[in-house]
Amino acid sequence: MKVCHITSAHPQEDIRIFHKECVTLAEGGHRTYQVSCGTLYKKNGVRMAGFGDAASGRLGRMLGTARKAYRMALKVDAEVYHFHDPELLPYGLKLKRKGKKVIFDSHEDVPGQILDKTWIPAPLRKIISGLYRKYETHVVKHLDAVVAATPHIAEKFEGRAKKVVVVNNFPNLDDIRFQKAPFAGREALVCYAGGIDENRGESIMKHAMEGVPGELVIAGDHPEEKQENVTYVGRLDRDGVNDLYGRSVAGLCILKPIENYYYSQPIKMYEYMAAGLPFICSDFPGWRKVAEESGGGILVDPTDNDGIRSAITGLLTDREKAERMGRKGRDYVVANCTWENEAKTLLRLYEEL
Image 1 (spheres, rainbow, N blue to C red):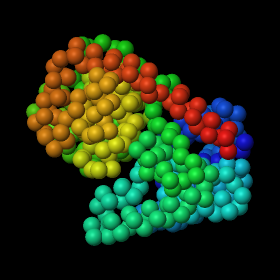
Image 2: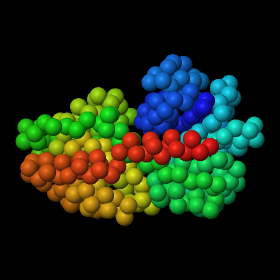
Image 3: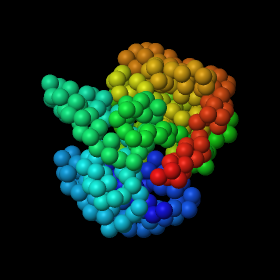
């Protein structure tokens, strides 16, 4: 089939959209296009239909950039359209009315996420969340399927969408290398790779490092900077991330206690395990099971700086324990949480359309 993935908010080579889903479809024999901000080129069998730069500002992205994405998508004239952002819901409905097969890929529980948006005045959040959910329900009942990034998100669509399929955002073991360097010879280093903001624990991690005999390296969209024993290295490519994991003793995933995170599945936690790194994470209900079943993680209260500091220091000090935990995490991911199995689910959905 001729298929087209559309995003107005994610980077052109987004891990889930491009590296996992689009490449999987191309390798499965489908003529695969991706519409996004950026340029025109072809990579890994995927035709990248970039439409230039995103509009400036949040409103500009939600309105102007979404419209540009839709116009480019129409030019592709695919049989199946698979879109990834809430602002594209109206255009998903338009594509359906044109007789196309249409899939909405929900990366987040958006109504729940709206309740935590600090840029929306608090008295309006519940109202906006309810209005969004009502409109989302109106759209998805007309679409062919919803792909949910976690089982928790899938539950939110049950009874609202025609078909709901879970495609977990698990790591591709071809991308995340198992790091075999002995922990005893590694630097006194812990790492974080991903989105950087207060809700994702930026200040929590920095405060916890105070007095720790080691360094925290943060990789993501932030200018390169050095602050005492915290170093920002900017966004890294896949080789750079693998190198960082190979130098580190542990990975951090200490998000703020926000309801929308409680049952999320942060890809970085699974990447740490795939690389053979132990991880320190917030003690959330959805994360507790993974940390305990794998034996590869330490749960901490994200509001307890002393407890986080103790967990970091403990792994930096006891390298044998850190290495054992890392290997347990790797074994757990290989057995339970790889993109290979999720790819089969995605391809099966397309076969059923």
